[in-house]
Length: 467
Image (cartoon, rainbow, N blue to C red; front, side):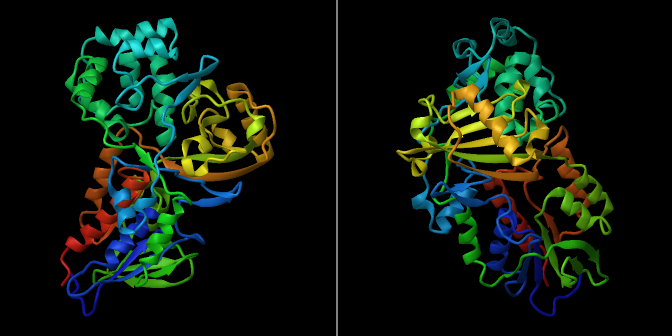
C-alpha cells in the first residue's frame, strides 16, 4: 500500500442523501494523521437525489420521499445534529384503506405491514371474500412451511394465507415501499420479520399473535416529516460541507486502478482525478458502468439489480368540490385492480402543516397496476388519475392545479437472493478496502437506511490502514 505523503484524498460519487451523509462524515474524520480532502461529484445539476421538494398550491411539498421512518434512528439523529428535530411533525391521521371489491376498506390492525393477528380482523375488514377468509384461516391448520432458503414474499403469503390475502393486503403495502411484484421480492430483504415468524412458528397467524403479545407498547409515531419539505435535510447537510469540494454536473464515467494503489476517476467534465479512496453512492446501474473496466465481476452483479419507474402527482382541489374524505390518511391500490393509481394520500389531512380550510391536497403515486402509465403524457395521466379518483372517492370537479414528477429507474428491486448478491458484491470488492458501495440498491432504500449506509461507508474507510 502506498505511503501517503500528504492527507488522503477521498472521492464521493453521488450527491444524494447517501453520498452527502458519507461526505459529511469523512470531512470530520481523521484518516491517518489528518482529516482527508473530500471531493463530491454529482452528475446532475442539483444535490439531494430523490429527495426533492417543490412549491405547490402556496406551500412546499415533497416530490420524492415524504416521511422518515422512526424505527431506524439515523434520520432522526441527523435532524438532531442539524438543529431540525424540534420541527419534526407526526401524521395527524394514521389509518390506511385499500381500494378493493368496489370500495375503500380499512386494513385490519396488525403488527407487521398490515398482516392481521387473527382471522376476525380479516372478516371485519371486508377486504377478502368469504372464500378468501376461509382460505386465510387455513393457515392455522397447515403444516409448518420449510424456510431453508430465501424465497419470494408472494410464495410464503400465498401458501400460508392464500392468493387474496397476498393480492389485496400484502401487495399494496409492499408496493408502496418497494414498487415491485411480491412474487419476485425477496422475503429476507423486504420482510425479514415475516421470515422470522415463518421459521419460528407453524402458523403465520399464531406467530403474529405471539409477537404482538411480546411487542412493547409504541413509544411514538411510525413516521415523521419536516414542514417545508425533506429537502431541508439536504440544505442542512450542504451547510456542513464547507471543507468539501462539491461539483454538480460532473459525473464519473470510469474508475481505473493505478500501480501505486490509488484510483483514477475519469469524469464527464473531461477531468482525471487521482484519489486514495472512493465511496460509490449512485444507482447500481451507474455503479456498474463506473466499475465495469476495473472490477467486471462486481459490475456484472450491480448490473443485475433491476429498477422500477414511478411517478408522483400532486393535485389541489377546492375543499367544497370534494365529498367528505374517508377517515385515515389515504388508500392503497392492489396491482390486481389494474388502475393508474397505486396509492393516494389525503396530504392536507395527514400532515398538519399542509392543512388548509379552503383546499384539499392529494398526493398520488402512479405506475404499479399499469407499469406503462408512468410514461404517458401529462394530460393523459391527469385524465386517468381523475377517472380513478371519481370512482374511489367521488371527485366531481377538475383540480385547481396539478404537479407531476417522473422518477425513471427510481426504485431498486430486491429480488429473491438479493442479500446473497450484496454479500457477493462485498466479497468481490474485499481486495479493494478503499472502495465502498452504499445506497438504496443494497441494504434498504428508505431515507434513514441510506443515511446509515453513507455513514457506515465513511466509517469503514476510516477504520482502514492509513499510513
